[in-house]
Length: 196
Image (cartoon, rainbow, N blue to C red):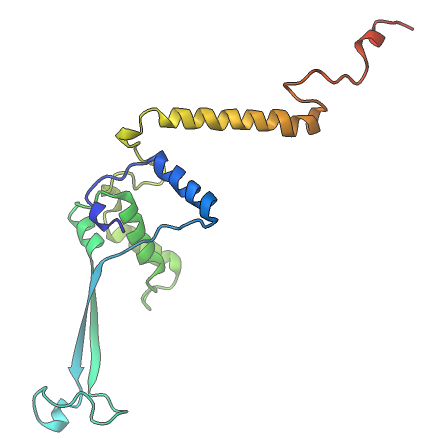
């Protein structure tokens, strides 16, 4: 769905997060973003029965319904994101992440590799992943310029909701009283003034 954005740097938008949760609240369905990896597979076939029929490739593809004449000899695959990554033109972190997941999980390791760890190491070293902005594990996506002060308001709203929740729901269970109501004394203060 976002293949056209592969050359633009991905930015974080709170509006997208709010839209996602609003749709989930309204419809009761949480949508998961789809990944789309464009590519081209080149299959090469050889005609195994060509010599026995003594001629060119204009024969019927099958001598009988159960005996194929063609045999697959090689498969080559070109992935557009991988080519962009090799040319250092892939700038979108999500596109690079989708390509990495596709290569790690969507392809079985060749028989020459003994483990999944070796396959992941080969995937990590075969392409220049660090050339994509924000692709390192501790990188944070930059905020979209049109967001403005929305992150500050969202953070203030989360803090206020957390404080309100603690004060009215959790605090009475923990300390016996609400933080915003009148104090709830275990012993009345007037009884504390008398000494025995």
